[in-house]
Image (cartoon, rainbow, N blue to C red; front, side, top):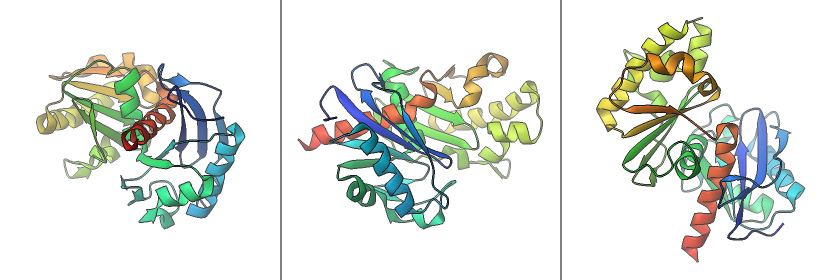
Length: 254
């Protein structure tokens, strides 16, 4: 499958699975059913790179592609390693995955990719100003977008909140761990989002993660200055966002 201006390709690398699919860049949707392979254990750079190659070869893809990664990513280098082998710290992921696939690979933080997809095609489409996309799951992922431009690697789940790492108090995993009612969890979210409001003054907050499917249980309990809405693209956001960002970089390079 040859890449074109109409289609891109995205891969979402996670701690348990590596998923990929071609993407309709105009419509912001998967162009084929995604292909998933369990993340190899241990998830060393070499093992993950070969799995990414398998996903690409499954579709016979040729052209630029984007890969999400659960880490801070600067210029293709993974600076941290959340839920993957620690040998990814300071690895040149862009070069490694490019060599494995034989393609031009853009590596991007997973929350950034999902957030950018929500801006282009989801709950934040056509919204100007400062948009914050937060994913509530095992931790708190964040993507900060200002007038359509992504500010990468914000890592706002690690803001200090009452002496704690914020995600250890307000993530969905924290809700389950502490057996919190929706009301009690909403109080923690209120504290977290108010703190973020005071720092960034966003025009819109989009909340993703699995718990966004139950937004009616907790979202009305929040009392914030900012409009808060659930994410729209669910589990496909990372693949879509990575594909779009990779295609935009390729176009910029000419």
